Image (cartoon, rainbow, N blue to C red; front, side):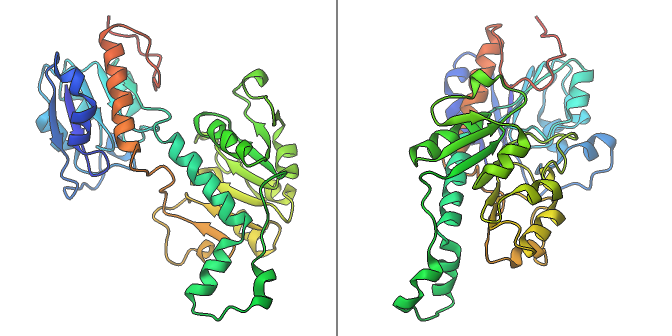
Length: 346
């Protein structure tokens, strides 16, 4: 096996997670030189994104008898996949393996697995934190003092916000993250509406949680939080129509993917005060451009795609992958399989 570390999940973190595996397997660890960058030129290189380093670093490190390749955000192109004729499994220690050419792996009958849920706890914490910031008007209060303005008691009313108890939280998507957000929100006394067409009603409903259609959820919620998967079908799933359905007192939260939201429609909704504000950890273009209009709104809490970036996440992701490999070796059923159409090589 070859394990490729990077700045976010260093090789030392992988070593810790793979300690038990190392006792009975030949595992080599390398660290990507992320300063060695490429200008994508091949079809395969252009098909991947959100990666760091040069695929040739991996090509040079792979040996002909390597059966398993483990990465976090290192680029896995067709050239990488072809570097070892023995390759059977590619593991990615992140939820969405956008840095891997899935098509090339599938064509060569190589299984690709990810680590679903590795940052679900972190993102769920982020969402609840963002909701509290929006609810209590903390952005305005924070900026007021940072601008060295003098506070007087008569100003209290300008900073009034809302308590969460009794408010309705609409969750679009009830998977690893959405379900954990619901658990946290229930502890605050919130009512939950959930929309997830991929889950049976019985897997969602419970005390304080009701299943809803999308339009009803959006129109009835005080907070609308997006947790859908990124896909071509879901592109701009939240747009002009959805923002028009929202209460003028409601807030929108997106910690999923920027592609899911029509950004121009969101800006229009904020400008025309069709919604009360928003919390955004993701945008269509990242990193966010300094002149992006979304940055100008005082009622928008925005962060640079760090919702899932907790100190615990790197090791958890590596441990999930180590567990996947142990199952693979033991011929057990794997989770997080990206290309299930590939027949397992045993």
